[in-house]
Image (cartoon, rainbow, N blue to C red; front, side, top):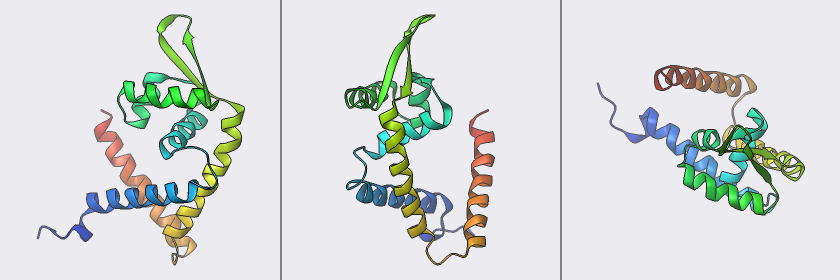
Length: 148
C-alpha cells in the first residue's frame, strides 16, 4: 500500500526536519553569531575540508558558482575568509577561513548543538545515537547512487 500522508513520507519528513532545524538555527544565531546560516555552512565545510577552491565550495553548498561568489564576497568583506588565485590556474580561486572565523565557528556549533538538543528532546541517548546512525546509513545509500 502506497503511503500518501505527508507525515509518513520519508522525503517530506527529511526536508521538513531540515527546514525547521534551519529556521531554529537562524532564530538562535541572531543573538550570538554575526553570520547567516549559509555563511556558517560555508565555514563548517572549510573547517572540515580545509582550503578549497571556490567551485568545490559552491558544489558543497549546492549553489551556483555565481551565488557562492556573492556569498564569499560578503564574507571576505567581513573578514571571515581569505581568497587568492591559484598560481597554476589564475581562473581558480582558493578559499580559507580566517582566525576570526575559526573563533566564531565555535559559537555557531554551540547554536547547532542547542538545535539538536531541542530536536532530540525526550530521546534517550541510545535513541539519539540510533537516529544518527540510521541517517548516516541513508546518506551513504543515497551518496553511492548520486555520486556515481
